[in-house]
Length: 165
Image (cartoon, rainbow, N blue to C red):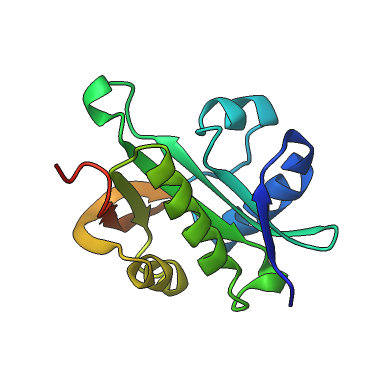
């Protein structure tokens, strides 16, 4: 399969939203229960760090970074989101998107990428670990999701080139 990583554009939103809704429906990808509209999603994600994986005209997945805080001291820290269409899982799409996010994050001067993942989402935990993230903790019963208390595993990746001085 020929996977091309491209910058996400507003016209990709219909495809991105559909993939996000697939992730929501699994109950293992996010605490969210509905997808936002483009304006809200756009406002919450860094413009320089948004990608889609394409195969011809189709979008196979997307990845984006969102700031963790508005405080200046956290300007180099971002939260990772990587979603892959159900039909494209296991084909290397997530890895290609994660590599693009990491490279873009370092060009933008980000020194820490973090993610909070359901422990049962083994594919997501493995993807992060494969790309240099490490588990830094577990938040037990952090939130109720669909009526059930859920834990999250907290993962982070420190840049080897940004913020090392």
